Amino acid sequence: MKWTKQRLNNFFFFLGIAAVIVMLLTFDVSFIELWEYICHAGYWLVPIVGIWIIIYALNAKAWQAIIESKYEEGEHISFGRIYRLTITGYALNYATPVGGLGGEPYRIMELSKHIGNQRATSSVILYAMMHFFAHFWYWFSSIFIYLALAAIGDLPINTAIATMLGIVILFCLTAFYILSKGYRNGLVTNVIHWLGHVPGLKGWSHRFEEGHAESLHNIDTQIAALYADDKGAFYKSLILEYFSRVIQSCEVMFMLLLFGIDCGGGFGGLLLTFLHSFLIVSFTTLFANLIGFLPMQLGVQEGGFVLSIAALGLSAALGIFVSIICRVREIIWIIIGIMLMKIKN
Image (cartoon, rainbow, N blue to C red; front, side):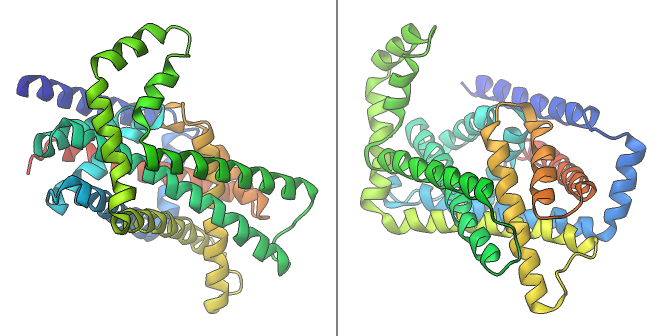
């Protein structure tokens, strides 16, 4: 078993290296232009990359709150270990199509060494659900921020925009309902059963349900127990995840400030710039997650940044700059995450 897990670890390691190479070769600009963008960012690249130390720390604390909740019977794993798995998991998620295809299995594999496979699986699934839950709250709150800025005349509002905002609200409310049912009743068994309706997967779904019925039931029980028995850990994890999205807005704000866009300066100007950054990240992540099947979301994130920045009346060139620097930041953190895979303690 140890040898098998080592092979899987090596597989994920080389997958990450391959992803970095692919990402470098698929930039829409030449390496000379890329270097010019990096030089233009200058010392601002330090806080742009460094802010993710805080973001990943919030993500790790949110996951730790789930692992150490009452339903896990007070299992304790050091924050450093969880922090490492958080960074590595997100590095693999960036590197693979369909979001958690790489990161979540790796986290389960590594965490199962300490708390067993079922508990590791339930905590990783719960954290993934919480990550999406916080995303929906982030998108939902951005609607009201946009409406508030439109009310003071800072942003436009018309029938088309109002319709789009209404669709996003319905989308978020639907997700809240589905995720809430998942938190109360568990989710894994229903997902496996639902996969049975997909052409070609009916036989596999039926065999998997029969062969792992008890394990699936235990995992769903543990998922439902978090919300039922330890709401403190549930809301702590949700708040930490939500604020990690808020902190992420600072990354775009740093780039706007780099171009001298500060909405007049002063506290009011910086606050307005931050709220614009909040909306840019919100729209871009929504757009990217809707088309999340592409490896590293190639082209999707770039298009999202260009569209969201243009929607706020800023130049498309700024959108391209923001998207490229964010891609550089992703590569840096993917490399860090892949290197952390070889650190055992």
